[in-house]
Length: 145
Image 1 (tube, rainbow, N blue to C red):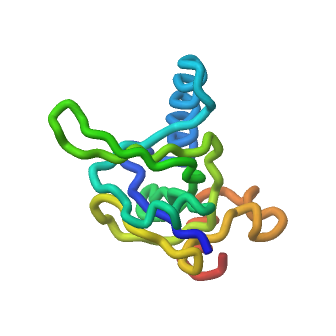
Image 2 (cartoon, rainbow, N blue to C red):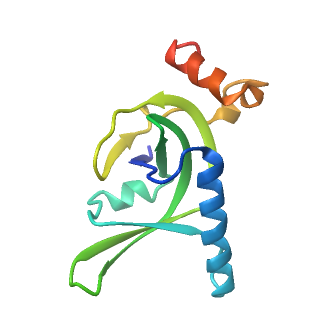
Image 3 (cartoon, helix red, strand yellow):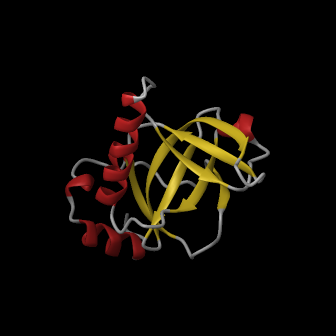
């Protein structure tokens, strides 16, 4: 069973903001002759990388709610110019909306088991994705979605 990561999406107020950032990063990668992807640099290096790369995703917390995920394609470690070990999370180009799931603020990233991960919005029934964002948020907070 896949293991996931969860992280705050700093700088994005909406899923559209995240999608715009991912699109820009994908275009930069394609212009450099690489496959379309985005990446996120973090200081901590996951120890359970094989479990994460076995179908795992990075779940994004936006405005206190898990709202989207991106598939983890690779995890690369490197040392930056200051001699600090870093980790590049290589992410798929598709931002997949998920059911809202409230999360308090935290630093860095955390592991997220498949059982605790929110469902993809497309798997929640017909018409769910068409509901306005605020209505989905309220229904999720009430435990109805």
